[in-house]
Image (cartoon, helix red, strand yellow):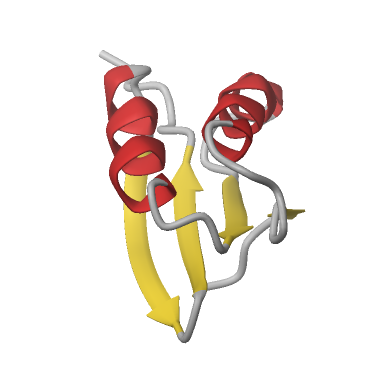
Length: 80
């Protein structure tokens, strides 16, 4: 999976990683993927839920030690 953008929020306290992710997501174009890095333990609950609630697709969440990686995609528009 090749993200178009990376947002490194390691070292930032909660709720900043979730808030910053929600600020950046609208900047994505349809089909683009944002990789978010966070080491805030609460972000594993907040970031995926917030992204889904705002219409984005959480493609993958993986934890590597204290670091959590999120791959979030802005869905492509559906043509009818």
